[in-house]
Length: 347
Image (tube, one colour):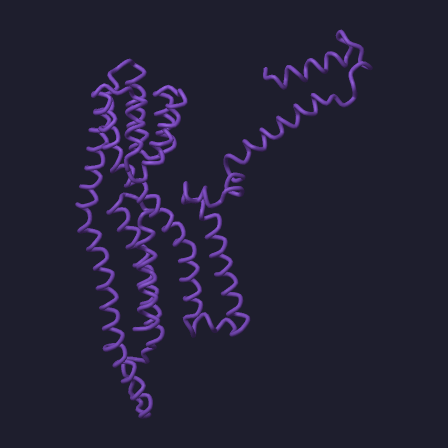
């Protein structure tokens, strides 16, 4: 039972005659009102530290930490553009605009880009932060272990290391130094460090260090082992990315080859067929030249094909290169934009 429950129970018993007359208790106890106000403020503070309320209060901070949350803004804006653009075109030109022009396709492309580009940009920023941290983490552990071996205490070693430069890891190291200077135990401080860094490699290394330190092991050896593990993990990840680079290049080149083939086909073969059909029709001949070739329809179908291929090829490139579908959104957005520009201005 918490303090609030005990305090309320005491007041209820007193009001019911359990020791003090009910008339002796004021109707509005100032201490009770103050206590309720304090608990209300604490509850409000907790509410705004998690979930949707935290997003409402600190949208930019939450979007930087969790890129997926940007979809709360980008998707409604994209849907608003798509529905508003569709309604505006139909009201202005009628339903025939869906089949006689590419304006609705343009609206769809821009709505798609608005939906995925913010998420792709924030995910790229987060990926760069994680990469910088994972590259610096082994050096940090190794430097602390070396200084500890030279006779420095662990807080002093971390203080010296915090004056160096470790990329995106530097502010977290300085925060760790500050906490240890305030007397926070090493195990608790290093756990907070791993939670603040918030990367898979950091959490794995910190868990290893915390468990080994709690078991009474040599901190220097534990840090050196964690540094070796982090270095191997980062190297394996880099080798995988470099090994899959050729497949990403193949995906991108196949997309550009597809656009080139479509461009040649549309500008030569289909154009010639359309002109020949129009010439035969204009001559008044009863013979037909393989039917009428609708060049606009074919180009529009080719455009849709290029947009679809560009989007899904980008996602495939992200899976092969970085092992995440989300990482492919930046490639997908670029390929969709290139396909749209190619068909609107060159094909």
